[in-house]
Structures are given as C-alpha cells and as structure tokens.
Length: 139
Image 1 (cartoon, rainbow, N blue to C red):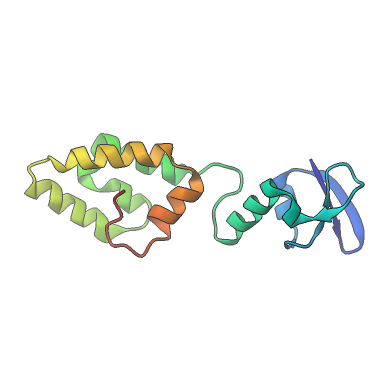
Image 2 (image 1 turned 180 degrees about the vertical axis):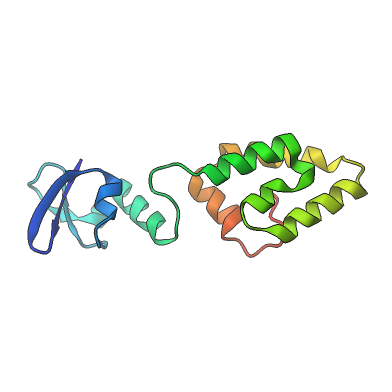
C-alpha cells in the first residue's frame, strides 16, 4: 500500500492502480507508511506501472487481448483471428492467404506464435504486436 502527497495533503493508503488514478508524475512524493517520503521514481514497481500507464498498457497485469490472441493463434491460427483481435486486419488477411498457399502448414507458425504470446508479459506483447508498425508481426 502506498501514500502520496497530492495538492498539499497526504492521501492513502492505496493500491498501485488507485495511486495512478491521480495526476502523478515521476516526482510525486510517495511513502509506504505515511512517513519517509520519496519521489515516485525511487520505487521500481510504481515507476514501471506509471510508465506502462503512459503508453496504454494496463497496470493491473491483465490483458485479455494477449490471452485471447494467444489462444486463437494456437487453436485456429490459420484464420488470422489473433491479428483481428489486436487490430491488425491486414495481418489477419495475410495469415489466411499464407495458410491457403501453404496448404495449412502455416498453422505450425501460428502455434509457436500463440505459445509465445501466452508466455510474454503484457508489456512485451503490447510492444511486439500492438504498438509495432510491422504489417505482419510474427515472433
């Protein structure tokens, strides 16, 4: 649990997600016990969550798109559903075409991809598949 100094007053205790709901920055005073105040950047867990919140990565550790895309890639990867889930429709169409051209062997690639998606962190998944400018992000 954390405390912050916001608008001249102490607020807390609160969780990481509650803390990030306030307009905090790297220099916001933070404490774990209401005393011994230090800037937010001195707390690695808070800094990681703060940076993730700035690029749209959920700070609570859950990312249903990562799980859904990974499962779809393993089970029905040749249909490219994993790419439609993450907002890359061109990659989805390319996956369908590659599956047709390879007589379904492309499924082996999508199985590996699905396993990788499920074993990545949310931040790795976001940067590798969602935030990338690649048309067909694979591995």
